[in-house]
Image 1: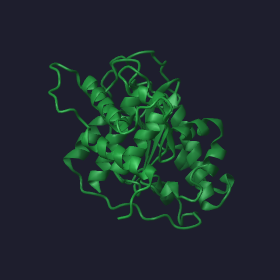
Image 2: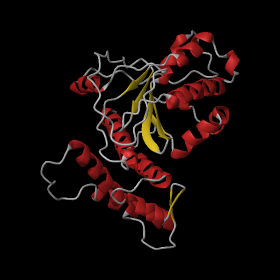
Image 3: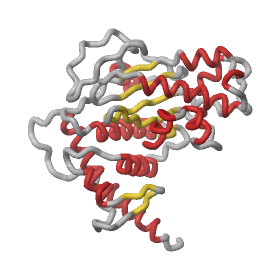
Length: 310
């Protein structure tokens, strides 16, 4: 094989160290809560990923177009808030370690910022030549009020079936085959909370979320249904991100179909507006700084589940 370029060599070193140092081979301390262990394991992986980058005060290393400097690396320390660069670095690491690109498209941290500024510009500019809506899952890192959470869009291609024939300029690829129900599916059913009404909001608490009452029984959506899932380590229950994402999906649908938004069939418009939003019951952070760590771990576990399924 040809010798790698210096950048490629740095990337390979980075990935080699990361893959071999995921967890320190030491016994965990006694009586550590699940949430604490959850946060600790992800920070270990973050430090392992960063360990392949030289420690030099003026050094700048690029990985998949992400410039990492010492100041970024310092954010991997306990009790530090992860910044955009470290989060994008870990997303790039996951995309190499778990090649699920055919099924999942993971947006970087810049997407939601642009979405907040201009939905139309975001829909036009983001991966213009790629059919994002044909993906089985879309994963969006969301930062609101200095708090990270994860928004997932599942099976948007099901929306295409709302009208016959689809009005897309070219037919979308068929959805992946439906797997038989498994024990894992039963576990997922227990993780989902009752869908919230978008008008309902709860005030955001500056600290660990209070223990919520047990949710009402919830029926698991079918594999053929389009849904949005929110994973939040503080249970803030906000719906701003899902509302913006629905507007993005409508705008992007029109662009990929080669029509204006007004020309999108009414049943498609209504189906996008009515996409249910569910909050997933997840481990909750026990401090003020680990929201980014939890968000990345949610993403990693989700990608791992899809990778193993395929």
